[in-house]
Amino acid sequence: ASLSALSEQLVEAIRSGEPSSLVIRRNRIAVEDLVAAAENGDGLVVDAIWQAGQVLGKVIAQINTLLNPEKVILAGPLGQLEQAFVQSVREAVEQFSSPPHAIPPSIVGSRLGLFGGALGGASLVAQRWE
Image (cartoon, rainbow, N blue to C red; front, side, top):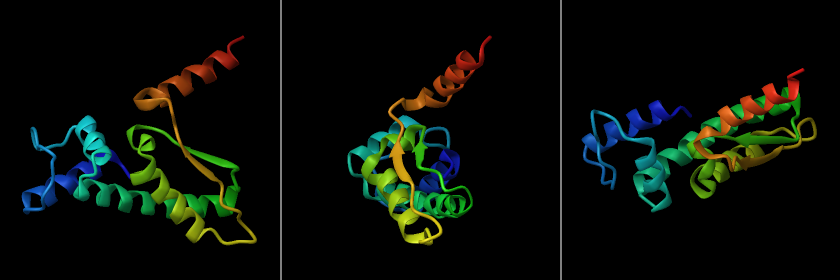
């Protein structure tokens, strides 16, 4: 569910005539515009993000079978989109996890926004600093 692949898919769809509120600038779509369009219910964007969530959910279900994590936190801009992305991932994980061997983990979106990865890395460094 890379943002660049999602952006390329949306650019292609818009150029082929699919209706959307998105504007293509320099052959790409800005992440902020993509998130805003999803939050505003742009059908093309919501569908594309939902599909990306389904793919990621299938992968997490496979990882769940091996590692059985209690919780998975979805970081980055898409992790903020509860209805369009997080719910899609959650549904796919539940569908493709194989009980009784793998109980689906809790799937949540990060509340740290675009800099969640950097904040997490800084926190890890601070904890290990001696």
